[in-house]
Image (cartoon, rainbow, N blue to C red; front, side, top):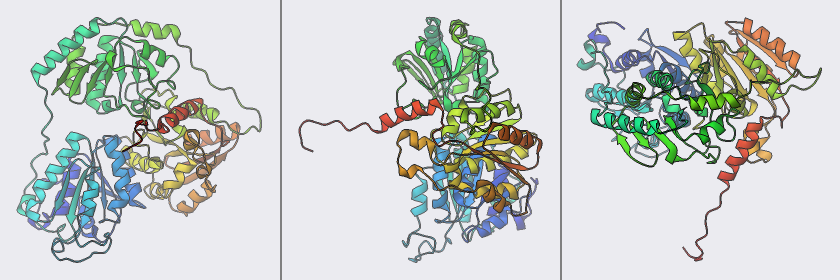
Length: 580
């Protein structure tokens, strides 16, 4: 970014672009509309900010989500109401998943707010706060820029909130302000600094003292990593604590990949009855489970069926430490507590020794018979073999969750899924965003995606954007004729979808522009040949449709689906009074 700005160029839109680049967000996913066109013109003037033009706003939001997972922050720019409302679902997912997104929307002309007029693209009211009110539910901060004098302060307030709270924020910019200059934009920007969270030293000391005493009385303590260990500093502190304590380490399903799976103390995933073999037994029999950054939902608890009890958990959250059902210590940054505890914890590898006595070496299904329809477990056997330290694996909602969660990630291999929000179709946009981020930071890496046919039909058109920008993921389209995850929770005719010619559709999106290779696999030899070819085709988007039987799914999905169904179908209690 230039160190000086000409007063003639010191406008609001360029200032927004400079701020995005400054916080490390060098791509913005956008869909043009008449309320944001002038703003987009200004964003394009910042050479370090790339604009990625998406097919629709929902997919742009999913792409910004995927980008934020890799870069730490993402951005999307939409038009008013018809664009903002379309993006709302994706922003809700980012809010649920603790991802900082900068949501920028064009807004009505600043002079229109008192005009008593009805505007196009709106819901027909003569006031224009409907989009703002909607975004209040899925963002941690909302600002509306209608006066150029307030812009500098409002922008910094919103961006700071996104970075500190790891949540999306909403910035609405009146469509007639984007190219206006102001003295606050003209000087070189002061280096951006965030007011960081701080730890109360006395509270930290008391928490560590209590934790050391409690853990010291344990026979076979265990360390459990949750999804809020995503920030790099938290992962580093977790690793240090694990090595100091010698405890066995398990991860919750939405935290897969956040602790190195090649580490000698890593035992696998804890997900109640659908855990990695032997892990559930070790976790639930431990007398103390030190859980860091866990989020407990009906999905992550397999329909609230876990036997892990709060009274034997030491819970470390973003700003709080709780011992069992007992004392709670506040105003403690997670990483500060982990680092301090690592310096004082006594090593105890009893739990890990117990696990090693129980654990069996991993096995894989044998080769299939000639001409036999490809089985799902055989598909993922070959995906396991293709994972490398430079692979980034992205799993769509559905049976792909259960199959990819069982894979062993080699050192350096990255993994993403959207479990808490679980929006079907998320992965297509996320592959776009993650791929854009990797090309900027680690171009030697490659995205591999596992997407079900039902999910793909939700957001398929963003493959067009991947081709447009020269991304080269390997996409496995798993064609089994419907919404398999819904089938196992509650079946009905609504879970059957229209079959598409998926490779043909992707070739139509390609239309001679970009680099594309497609294949179809119905048997194991066809799959082996397709995988071998795709791995060699760097620089090309590789799309492999694999056909499996509609009822072919993992045993874990069957178990989990029945438990979630039971939780969903609980009937309300009757009062016995027959009244209100």
